[in-house]
Length: 387
Image 1 (cartoon, rainbow, N blue to C red):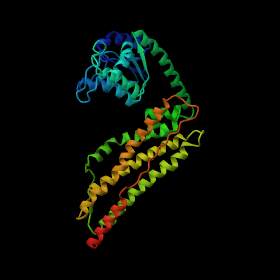
Image 2: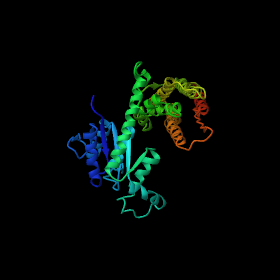
Image 3: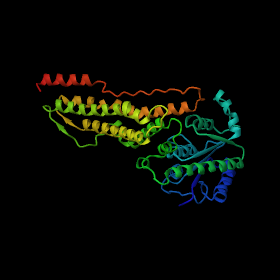
Image 4: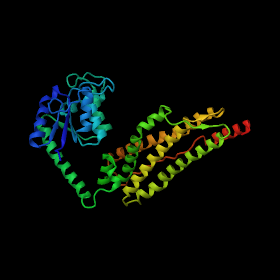
């Protein structure tokens, strides 16, 4: 078992001494593996550029990130228009590793002034106001805790304490798993979901449900993109006109089954999985529901692609594109609903606590919005062509 790898992410020239001090603290004092791009030990893939190398190191090697924000924004990626440090931070967030963020105290002191007058001149403090925007993103959009610092020793002192907390939390998780081992349904969870299932923080049942759902959406990202781009990559099925009315109605019946299943899962089964008020939910059942939603999403996209790739005789060649659109609303809601719901929960948890619990309502009802009109069109065609 190797020691943890800690990546230090920051601009270089203005924070050179701090990076050097952190390197020796991580390697000599802690005995961990420091990952800093200016050192020969930093792994480099010669076939990709600097930005991709830095992101790759986060994705493949980093166990912990220490992000230090000073007065310089750093080199900017021409594609995303974000700095290398910003992209490293986003890669660490996506990976789900612990991130400890430190911001120069002098920058924090001028931040309220910038908020009041974002068009002002702040060159004595930062080389671009994008530094302020990055800080706002870290604190208010990503909701990551930040520490202020004046020198490297401030950072080192805080890291000693925070790493001890992290070690203690790791021991708690290990105790949860000793003996019976990790349940099978937890073994396939991604980091954020696994942490919710193990630690069970406030509102964990709902957060776990929506987080695993989001993981399912991400798992199907390529298939969703293929669907959005109207790609036709499935084998073509020939449907003669005489069979088309019955064939289309059978397809719509199949899609209706997916919709009914999703509504049952989200309106009935998940309520049971969450448990009675005041009682803990069943994490295995919650995860199962999210996985089933992912499966319904997958089947819905397969259904739409089957419609698109069919070969139809007139006039049904004009009907098929409209039929495929039945899936659009379903796919869009499956994408958007968990993200918006989870964000609402997280934002609510940050609010001051009240004497009475806050109540949040989440409503998602899936329907085939134009099914009746579609059936009318099919029946009109049957009458018109004597089918």
